Image 1 (cartoon, helix red, strand yellow):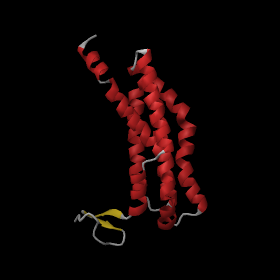
Image 2 (cartoon, helix red, strand yellow):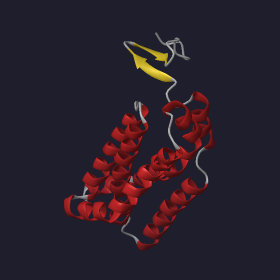
Image 3 (cartoon, one colour):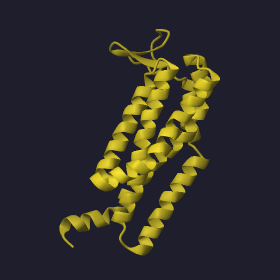
Image 4 (cartoon, helix red, strand yellow):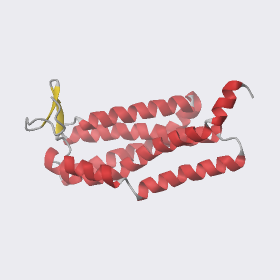
Length: 191
C-alpha cells in the first residue's frame, strides 16, 4: 500500500464516526420536530393539518427520493452525494430557523428531506468502500445500524427540551445584535 492508502486505512474508524454522526442527524430530525409542535402551533398559528405537513414534509421527500439519490450517488460519486446532502440539509435547517409562516417551514423541511435522502445511502456506500475486510465491514455496518436505531428510539432529550424551552423563534438577528422577537436584548447578553 502507498502512504495515502495507509493513512486512509488507519483513519477508517474515524470515517465511520463521521458517517454515523451524519446518519444520526437525519434520523433524529424525523423524531425531534414532534417536541416543537406546540411551539409551531403558537408562533406560526399553524393548523392541525399544517402541523401534520411540518412533520410529514421531511419524511415524504426523504422516502420518495431515497432510491433516486442512491442511484445518483452511484453515478456521480458517493463523496459528492454526501457533501451535497449535508450542504442541502444544513441550508434547509438554516432556512427553517428563519421561517415566518407554516408554508415556509414546510418547504424548508422538504429541502431537509431531500438532503437526508442523499446522506443516508452515501453513508452506507462509503462504509462498504472503506471497510474491505469482511469482519470489519460487518462490525461497521452493525455500528451504523445501531446508531440509526438508537437515534430513532432515543432522540437526544436535552436538545429537544432546549428547543421547547427556548421557543421556536425567540432569538432573531436584528441589525448587528441578537434580540428576541419582542425587541428585548438577547438572553446571552449579546449586543
